[in-house]
Length: 239
View 1 (cartoon, rainbow, N blue to C red):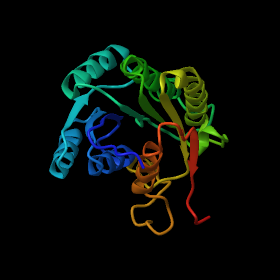
View 2 (cartoon, rainbow, N blue to C red; view 1 turned 60 degrees about the vertical axis):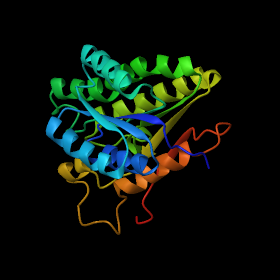
View 3 (tube, rainbow, N blue to C red; view 1 turned 120 degrees about the vertical axis):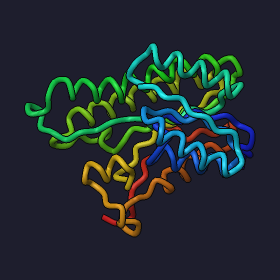
């Protein structure tokens, strides 16, 4: 199992939910962390928790759907951390609505954030990984990216796109010793799922928890460099 201590990671949407759980799991492994998001108060609180574990933690406030903000934010993060070894593209948004009822602006925003946002962040981080000829990129899709369903056309389309982009990138940068992993979790009791009403806070025995997701990511990163977890689906054992 590879020792991750001293690595530098960027986690988008790292202030809460899956991103926060991943950041905490990384911190326990001795990884220095930069988290991004749009709510500075939430990011500050999470950074304090991470620092209490004993690692270097910073945050940067920006919208991943805005390329100019992403360029500035990633540049500042890399300058502060000194390097980047791991990128977790976790930030994303979701909404329910039938194909015709959902407003065009909301449909477009989901695509802009979930697809273009991931592209923007990866585009700015990738040159650093290529220059050091090593790195890991974890892209968070969803089971909604494997099968569409009623009333989630925008979200599902965005997550299908994430899988295609991620798999193409994986084949492109393997020669640079960069591992790209695509994760397709089922329903997890994250802040977003709870707010959308598809999971409950008190459902720990029946629904996947953010910590389960984080554990999978850490396990993948600990594989020897010769091995790559290309994709993985995480499901609850309870139907």
